[in-house]
Amino acid sequence: MAKMLQHESIAMFMECGEINNMKLDKKMADALNAQFNKEIVSASIYASMAADFFGKNLPGFGMWFQKQAKEELAHAEKIHRYVDEKGERVFYDAIPKPQDSWSKIIEALQAAKKHEEYITASIYGLVETARELKDYGTESFLKWFVDEQVEEESSVQNIIDQLEMVGDSNMGIFQIDRALMQRK
Ligand code: FEO
Image 1 (tube, helix red, strand yellow):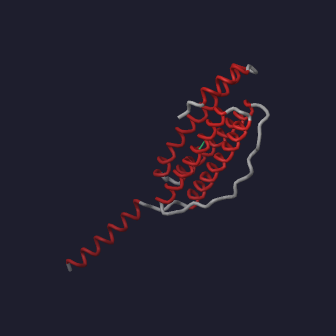
Image 2 (tube, rainbow, N blue to C red):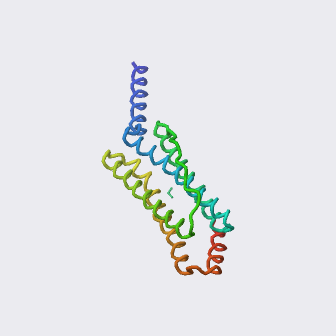
Image 3 (cartoon, rainbow, N blue to C red):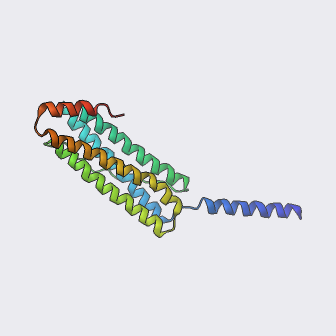
């Protein structure tokens, strides 16, 4: 009898454990998987911008975008780990070929800003999906990304503002390039 009770409580404990670690709804898992791939695509775009800047002897811009590309891969990794923790797995999509070069520095930065706005909208879409599904764990996980997007959009906008300030001044561009090397 005592043995049976022990068995029953173990079964109940396991059931509770399953409830606490509920698998992701398919819609949520698919949306997170899409975001995982968007982060990898972001890394590819920024790595291509870095290559273009290094090729044009603008190492500060190059290093800034190289670090940005690494951050994007870290974002993808964060989603990968979360999806794993929730008992699912990620799937890799093909990466589209990124643009190779930008005729003006500011054009690359404006493209990066536009891309970040697209990513922000995508993250907001994930939050909406989590809310629809009452998946509060995923909503909480996504808060980090919501905050990160505010920072990302702002840091790109700061560089655009500086470029607009110096216009075509080579000295101004040289100084911005040197300042961007300081990025941690
Ligand atoms: Fe991972 Fe730049 O958003």
